[in-house]
Image (cartoon, rainbow, N blue to C red):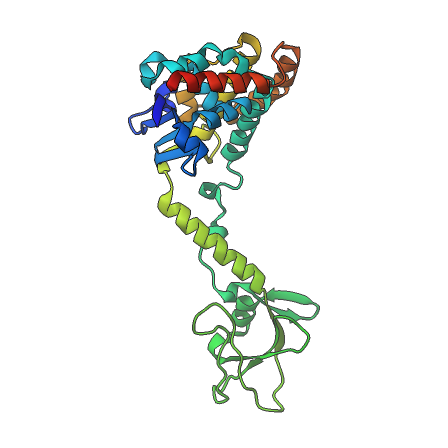
Length: 343
């Protein structure tokens, strides 16, 4: 295996790195003939979460699809290149062929995805309080009374009753519905509402002749969904990168500033591809992007401008003379040239 390119990518290359930014590496390699025709061929090698390499054939395939990260490797600032084989210059010399109308979707579409992420409507950072508070089956139990339903906890509190003195009997043909009994004397041995494990309701033996005080329904699916959400939230809370979330000016909400930064960067790059036929990895507006990341923006104005530019992108790419896609024969010949140079 021979390394064709190793480069520093991400925020360090864009010029938007902060003191807490990691150093990420990406690159391209070429495998031997034995690897290519045998069982040891690998399209990709992930050394760590911060370092990843692509076999040249896979790299060219991703370039054909206008993958933004791969295209950036063709336009890296010299100071970000750690290692470069002469064979990689063959690809760089032909890099303009990979700027096609597919960039509209790869760059513009990715920018749209970043807007969706950044809005935070379903971001866990902005989950409403009742979604991140651990609940019990009690919170999903309801009783029926005079044509209406009410929370079981409210029903018990209103009657000044204890849940421990309640008994439940399952009702045939009524899923998750129970006859609710109450023993104020505490002599009938009712087992209460919730099981010892706390994940389900429990049943009691009720003497004949006793009359139920109400009908209770346990929303088991709702409780299961809550448990899943809560575990997901707890996992996220443990692993989250707090520094990515910023308070947006005059918005009273925290948003992932890194998503907003990438949205602006990708839109700018898409416009440059359509109008200048190039990719500027080192961003000339790096300081503006860092302000976006810190949340020092008017969010409404930012979103409006971004959405307007997304619509304009379609017209820019339509007017450009960029090819629709990369010719397969060209890519195949390019790959062969690179392999011959390496060998």
